[in-house]
Length: 617
Ligand SMILES: Nc1ncnc2c1ncn2[C@@H]1O[C@H](COP(=O)(O)OP(=O)(O)OP(=O)(O)O)[C@@H](O)[C@H]1O
Image 1 (cartoon, rainbow, N blue to C red):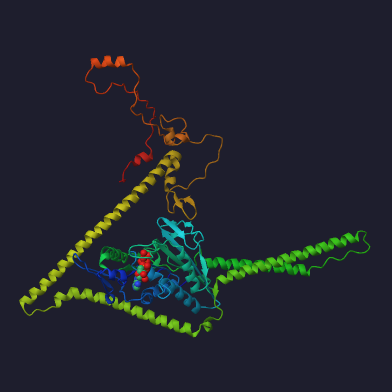
Image 2 (image 1 turned 45 degrees about the horizontal axis):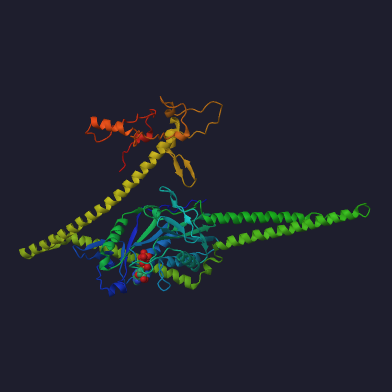
């Protein structure tokens, strides 16, 4: 396998955040709602008018108002990302926002206004056609899953079966059983997307007649193999979100907002979340020579089938060349019998050859259907028609323009910052009053900014508190899990192997318990085979007072606590009256307490008990 000279890992890269504000809907216009959002596309800023106080201003990588179309957003922001996906990096584009703010409009669009996803399909196939050559093979496959309530559903499976997310935080997450459909064109991919959409959970909200009441992830995998280098460049567009935020992919977040005043709180929440997402750093990796590449699997299978056919053909040739059995000699006594037997043999050989022919044809058919899934160009550059050529040039120009615009926005943001800080220094005042007025104005501005920051801090503190509470709940759950493990360890595992057992981690991929790498624990010993001697006892069983053998059904030693009796013994009424006369002021009858039968034996404290309730709220 040839090593690539290109770097596999890009430098740390922040998540790119884009805000898109939709126009006021007809309903909102009719109900007379004001617009409270002002977008400054040239500054990448969004300003929200606060009816109760100071306006809020947020800056992003780009901001689009209601006049911007999806084509512009695609060319300026998404196209470079898809280009790097085609270069082997993982990429993710996701839309975030309140219901009815335009996530579906942005991602899927309509037949008249294509969204980001169908544009991506066309981009991918234009690239495949442009790089067509007999030495390059592509394989494109799609999957579509939905996250609804607590379930992950396969939107491309007939019964929309439930799926399980597997993997670990360190190695990334994946969904092993999800349906993956191989596609041969952009139109086919659109058909797959529409088929999946029909299976999505939909509903109606106050803000959206056709709300998609769930989160959906459309996954596109592009694999490309180069014959010369024998390298496979695997890239997944849209991975599980956990990988995309703080993981190894290039990520764009499109935050959708509405402009109406009644959405003020939700709009601020979305903008604030988007602002925080700007700080998330990813480490994009170019995937070369991945172990799980389907293309490699297909190529190996084709190779294997070809070899099988070759072997069969060789055997066939041998058979053909072999001398035919001679007919029976007339001298023989049972010549008729021999003739029949030879004819039978002959027939059998012919039917075997026929069967093998059929099997060879079947193998050829299998090869054909596997090859059909792969996309391979025949004539290299000569095949690229003029339309494609001009498309490439147009795309390159669009990317250049987008790059320039991005730089302009960055410059403008820098200028704004500079202007603010140098305003005082550069101002010259002719009169003292002018200076006082100016400084008063500056002071007011600073005060307003201070109030804004204070409000912001208070809101962030609230958000932080909520997050902390979530973490505490998670911690409590983890401690409970730890307790459970300790309890199991105390009850089942002898002292000697306990440290090792507690370090075991469940490996979802291998579906087995494993010791993590770099663990200092002693390796797990193989279960000892019986030698005739009794098995060793654990420390708890050896403790003084412990029964000779800890029986499995009493491992937890849950003996009922002796409670005070709730019934009394029968006594004749005369006896009670006589007693009452002697002691008139007695509220409760004097019932002798039943002797406490406390038979619990002393036990050494378990690790579970030692843990106590520390850390649990
Ligand atoms: N930029 C836009 N320009 C014009 N119309 C838009 C724009 N964004 C959204 N809309 C319209 O707003 C309505 C709601 O949009 P959409 O269904 O995309 O919202 P959503 O965020 O996906 O909602 P939900 O989360 O409920 O599924 C649709 O009728 C859509 O056409």
